[in-house]
Image (cartoon, rainbow, N blue to C red; front, side, top):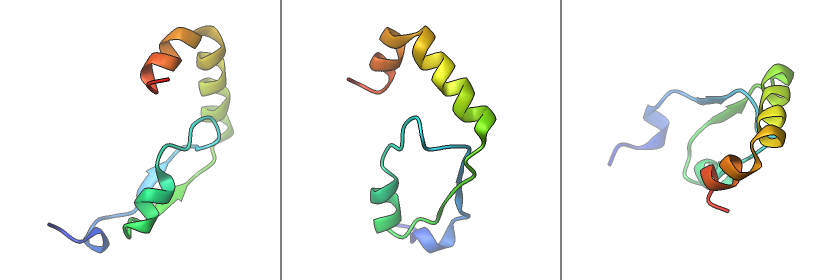
Length: 61
């Protein structure tokens, strides 16, 4: 297994609409950088509002 420290940081555009498993990644040594791009937050919130069934399916609710 390749140690996480040998990878580049994981860049995320935003994590306000869905934070996934950031804690798990970080606990395993993965450097996670969240850019918190407002354009991406707005885009995801619009998608969630316009497609609630698809969003729930995508995140396995």
